[in-house]
Length: 74
Image 1 (tube, rainbow, N blue to C red):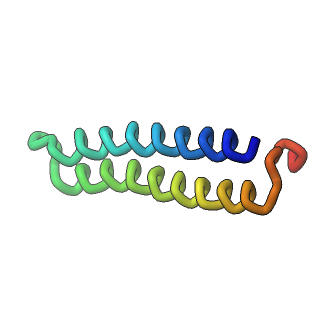
Image 2 (cartoon, helix red, strand yellow; image 1 turned 135 degrees about the vertical axis):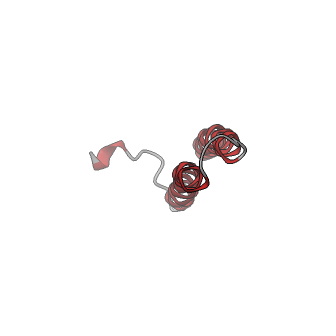
């Protein structure tokens, strides 16, 4: 059961990072967008990817400590 939860967490994080990574690449290489707005548009996907990695690390720690169901917190 622990392995299944870990696989789900990693796959979910991977899909989010891939999605926002593609957005980052699309925003970064648009020549018609001014550079200041391109920078702002690139910071948003970078922030989402960073938060996703932090949440994944927190979930892995929870799974390693034996807490498989986090619904009891809510």
